[in-house]
Image (cartoon, rainbow over all chains, first blue to last red):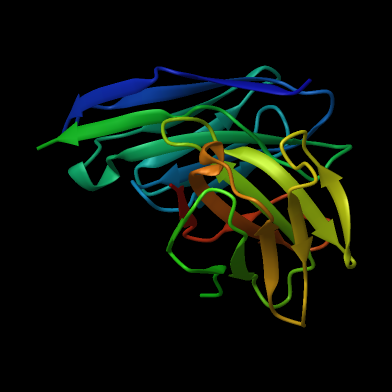
Length: 110
Length: 113
């Protein structure tokens, strides 16, 4: 059974304090790993797709990386507007569904 | 930018009543999904739909649930007899054919009293 585990559950940073979020996964055949951002009461908003180990994607202050067992979302010099829950999800080669982790709640204080 | 649209944003219903949640997927997408998120828990897959039939469903998606694409733009989730434990955020998503990336709507918050 495909599984996604995210850590930490919650992370509090000062503005400008860089850090990383972890997503460990077990999947029978990886079709893609996805990072989404979710604001309270809203739907997941797409950030990145990674398809194979060694791949990296970058967007503003965020950078996602992928190995055969885990993915990291690196946040460089975060701002308060980066505060949200960050969700990791995987899709395997046999099915259409996404399997989500429980997310990391990030709070960035000014 | 194209987006998935869901209505209503909040639905309140009495236990045992039927509800229909509506979604308008992105126009050139052909795969459609429903997920739910109980407060404080992870997003869970319910069902996927392609070519006017269910392609995959989870254990949660029992006989009380059904999906339909009544016309060329809408995609609906019906819950026949709601239970208290059906209270959750329900998200619709869509994707292009042969693409795993799914785009999500803002969700419908279902409150069963």
